[in-house]
Amino acid sequence: MGATGVWALLMAGGFVVLALLGLAVLADHSRTPRPDLARLRAEADELAAHAAQAQLDAAAAAEQAVLARAEVAVAEQARDAAWTAQETVEQAYDRAWQAALAGRQAARVTDGAASDDEDRERAVSRAALSAYRRGDISVQELREVFRRSGDWDPAQEERERAAERCRIEQGAARRAHDRAAAGLRRAEQAARVAEVAAEALVDEAAESAAEADEALLTVQRHTARRRLFRR
Image (cartoon, rainbow, N blue to C red; front, side, top):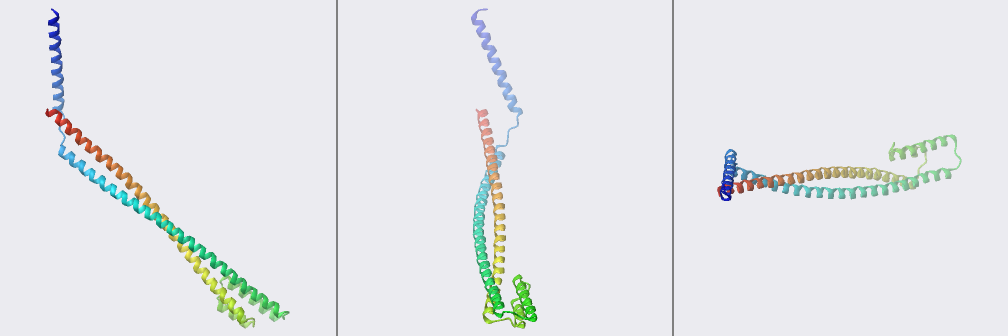
């Protein structure tokens, strides 16, 4: 057989191989079910819409988290202001109490030596004054003790009233500080919850966007493949 015959056989064999490969591809294509591109596109559109909504929700949640953290800053300022006010009132109460105590001590020095009965009365007065400072008795009860002991004067009465007013203001300032501190704790808790929710929605939005992109690529891939086989 000459060279021409050999080339003819090789070409014939090549055509046979190509034909077999083509038949195999067609057979495999016929066995693979064709996807429903309309359904795939609808699913991709649905995923894209969900991703867009998730992104909007994430942005809104992030804004709420920022506002919640701003509320924390406001609550911190309120707490600090309440603490400063409490310290001011406590200092005023301490000064008023020291003035009232100095008045009582000055009265005892002025009176000089006292009898046993007077000593007992003054001991009762001192005990009543200590009880008043602890908050165990009211200023009215303290005045009554001093009147019965004959150990009262208008200037001292005014000092005692000033101390009583400061004591009341001190209690109110402490309660105001407690409320401000509780408000700060609530604001911090709300901020933490808002931030966690925002982070979760950001993650969900990212996942939804990735799923939507994957679905769209699937549709595009099958569309391109279908066009290829139609040629």
